[in-house]
Image (cartoon, rainbow, N blue to C red; front, side):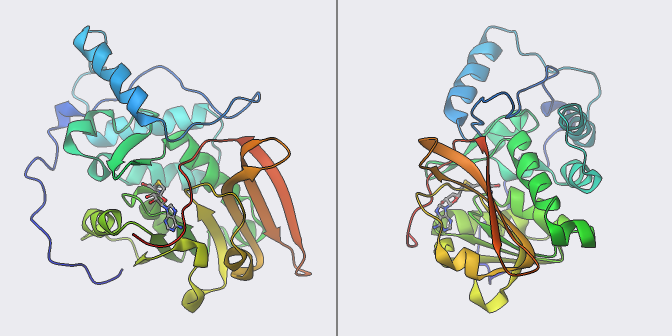
Length: 283
Ligand code: SAH
């Protein structure tokens, strides 16, 4: 990771009391049947949840839950939704999502919802993160090696997906353009044993040449066009998964690009999605 600036001590509210974390029992949606995956529409969700809570309809489900148990429930829901890659499910069971969001929102951390992380950005909902990670695992190198190899993530945000990637790849570079979020991710990931994870502050559209090429490239923000550096830094056998404007469809789609053994690029457009915008420059 990059050198962390001096930071205030962790919130005294962590670790959370085990009774404060719960999972919502009902299933949630996937990106099948032409529906738009909206990983990052948290404010409406948060408002709905608050209203439900106020109406007494959103009671914690289950007795004696601890955070490992609620994570396991989330994993069961992902599995029921069709996530089949055991390594991905295991990573979701391991990383404590509630540590990456504001303590006031931690109670919602294991629901399938995006949540605000500050500076108008959101942590993506688990089902969409699982979808992206599964797609990465279906790339040629990942299938051959059984892991994601050298990973580049664009859009660190709070660092949650970076933590999952660190468990699934050999090394991870994660880039964030907003200094405030980069610093928050450094703090969130501090002290976690996550192997070779480097957090970089800068414009992810440029990729990260010093550690290129990458076997897996994943973007958490959607652009109008594909930054050329990402393709230049995609290894042979590697796969890129990114939300991107799909001119034909007229909205955002999940773009998957494979660099085949002969060096040729193969592109496919998958699910309709709605991610926060990929912006230029750092701020
Ligand atoms: N994976 C993140 C999701 C963050 S939301 C998580 O688990 O929390 C997407 C992030 O992409 C935002 O933090 C936004 O600031 C960042 N982003 C947008 N454009 C970027 C760019 N050009 N380079 C790096 N990060 C960018």
